[in-house]
Length: 292
Ligand code: ATP
Image 1 (tube, rainbow, N blue to C red):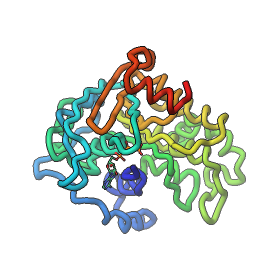
Image 2 (image 1 turned 135 degrees about the vertical axis):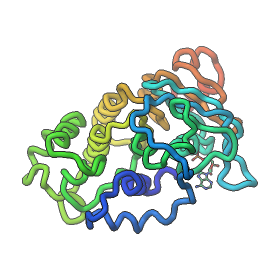
Image 3 (image 1 turned 180 degrees about the horizontal axis):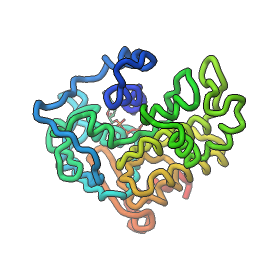
Image 4 (image 1 turned 45 degrees about the horizontal axis):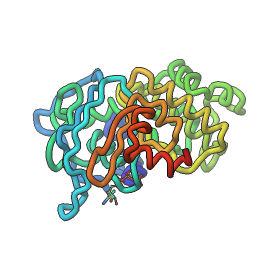
């Protein structure tokens, strides 16, 4: 269940945009050696602006050979569409999503983006086009500005403020003693859970990827904060292909499509009302999980 909660963002930042010579970012290199071997083909291509049409074509995968986790997943997600993955713990929702940025490679079948097999793309190129928001936001000791700019290391101040505004962080930052230059983390101001989430969202507005993966928190923030963050996430997902590992009923209800995953693969898909009326796995899951 926790493949996703490793320091993926750290790895990403290094692979995508590590600016040689900026000493401050050198330390992230030290964290990346736990990754399995995923590398570029000699003729891998750079693609700069993907639309974000995603296809899983009979994808099989297992973390070890004895035990397949995905036994033939086929799925098309249109550019701009929001799909919510739901299903019992261990069904493979996180695994499906972690194959897209190639944290692991499929063992059979293929995943394409805009019709291109992701193994034919440069890893940097692919990962630049995918934004990930996880429940554990990775912050480092540094200023708010630096922490937001982590989404795009060469960002200029006006676009950093714009990202902060779109993540509804502007007022908070303006009220801090040093504004954007306020140090956060161990040596500085502590941010609340909701504020950390907003910072992660600001990073993504700045990074502006066509594809988003949202790994929804299982542990709740207070209801009001939760609703506000959900609103920001839905603003972030506008115009982007969004895969949500979903735990919240409102997210699920608002998704363009719900994908129900169980041990056998994709069991059902459709909109909330359709699936409730169908009286299958989703309707039972929905009753148990949300007392509906
Ligand atoms: P949850 O809702 O609990 O997050 P999930 O549907 O996202 O579950 P996955 O995390 O994708 O499920 O896990 C699918 C299966 O793969 C599980 O049996 C899990 O134990 C296994 N698994 C996940 N990550 C790893 C890993 N890094 N190494 C080995 N097995 C793993």
